[in-house]
Length: 472
Image 1 (tube, helix red, strand yellow):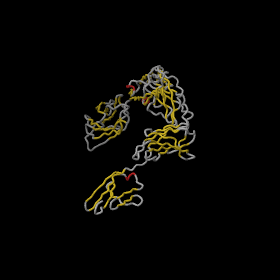
Image 2: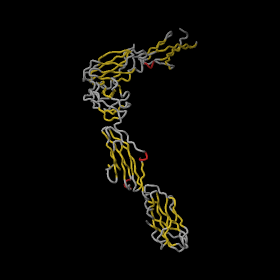
Image 3: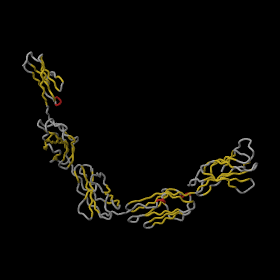
Image 4: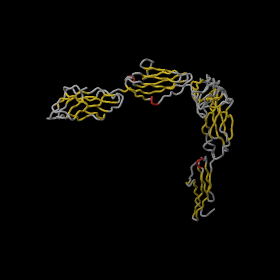
């Protein structure tokens, strides 16, 4: 009580409050002031203040309001197992406990056709899974979970779609070994004839060695959605059996029959060849010979190919297949023998192949014309030409330049120049003398046919610039 009568102001989180009919009521008299909140919301919690003021001064009183509510909906609801009479649910805790500790969870079900929610059980706050039993096979159900605290039961989280109660899958087919190496076995099997009403999502592959009675998982941490799998890290020469188990949302099947006994070994190995054979250079008319080491059990059948076409043993190309080696040789190699070759070894366990190339070298083609003769003087001419169209499969090394004096049969060497050159000044010629000239390209296999001037060139004192052309 004070004199004069003070003015009272109510604040929430520092913001003044005013009367809001039906929700915020403020009633103040000479000796009191009352704040009433109707239908308070969670976000209206916080720090409240009553500020009392008159000419004598100001007084404040603070207090905190905590608005408690039911929990929010649990999160991450999922189905972890479907059987013919039961479904197992799992979930995570709600994002908000409503200001009070969660005391447990309520689980309910609803027939998808008849409707109406029915409680099927509860669990404590530390349990986040529940098996809903006593369901009828083939029926569809909706399921939901609600968290509970001292205020009450919170908002539910519901399965998005109805769940059909199904059975676990049938037994997969017996696995078969389709490929074997010295430390791995590739398996294949048929899916279960009956998937129990839901798709197969995974297979578990197990193996057992002859030295053990225990089955060991082969794909731990690795999903196998298809009906095939390669088991690795096996011991060469050890006998193994394999079996598989199918899995769907309804659970795991019983294991399949165990496979026939399999012994990892080198049933077909990589082809082995000297690296020098992978890119062969052969002389025209010479011999090409390639030896390839072949391993496998049973002994593989070996086939040789050139440019994708199978080769046959004959006089020009000879093929000799032995138990652990195959040899291909070419006698009198021609340019047509150049190309891509492949040797393929095949047995019932697989295929191994190796590719290599053969380049049969020959002399270059004739240099390309025109052979241009220019800057003619009484003792010199300049020759110009172009490289040959084909280098014969070997790099050009030089050009041979020759001259022939009219009336003589012999050609005389003028110079041998580097392959990068395309012109040359011929000197030391006789004045008023006719000459023929020719150019030959050269590589490791020899000289090309020459490019020859069509008409004789006469050396004379220049009165202008003259040009002559020659063609091959």
